[in-house]
Amino acid sequence: MARADGAGQVALITGASSGIGEATAVELTRRGFVVYGAARRVDRMAALAGRGVHVIEMDVTDDASMTSGVEQVLREQGRIDVLVNNAGYGSYGALEDVPLEEARRQFEVNVFGLARLTQLVLPHLRAQRSGRIVNVSSIGGKMYEPLGAWYHATKFAVEGLSDSLRVELEPHGVHVIVIEPGAIRTEWGGISAESALTRSGDTAYSAQAHALARIYGVADRPGVGADPRVVAAAIGKAVTVRRPRTRYAVPTSAKAILLARRLLSDRAFDAVITRAYGMR
Image 1 (cartoon, helix red, strand yellow):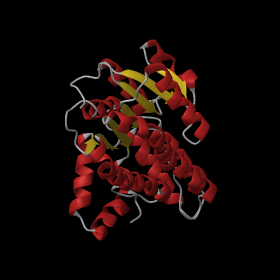
Image 2 (cartoon, helix red, strand yellow):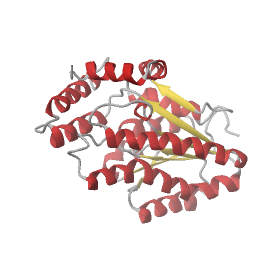
Image 3 (tube, rainbow, N blue to C red):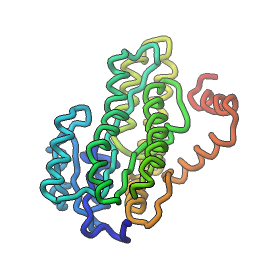
Image 4 (cartoon, rainbow, N blue to C red):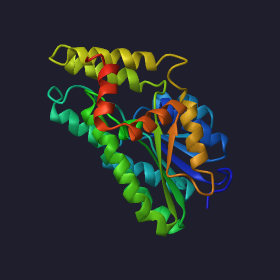
């Protein structure tokens, strides 16, 4: 059972070099966890190291890297209590324009890396008969956009994987929680917009690519996109309350979008998306 704080508990967070992962590392450290922040670029985590976070190099597309990282945590701490699968990125562009090699990489990072790291940690959580696995999905796991076929496919996959895993692990005392962020001010939006423009900015899908870039540019502005600390606070709550919810959608605007998706028919939601992207 998780206590009201994280004293004595160990958390491993992927994608900790920026955005949601970095904010979560700070939040869990504040709550008393021993935190390991993992990312490909350790040099970008100097500030976290200064806050007492153990920074480790990890590439979620490299099995040896993930295995080594988990072994290091267990060697140094003897346990892992929380795994936050946050590493991921958005690959955008029309399905017709995106090479399958890039589509496979999107799945390797967003789905298979998450699944493999979970496999590596699970034997230890089961042995303890306790623990939390937090999978950072997106409202994109419940809705869709033009030019986002591969990204949304990965997040729909994370949602289904997490649901199956939740009931699979319930008898072993391990909780699985899904976090569904909406518009958050991170590097994610800029990277996604750039990929859409690179692949489809000069093709038959140019109008949609430029519309998507404009929308994501607005989302990154203060007062529009939420601070990553909002998501970190939700994760902090999820890993410390006695009985966590299965899903946390943040910020409030994310809940509104998911409510609209539940209430509207596919055709009605298509119309909303079409208008939003200036396709009609």
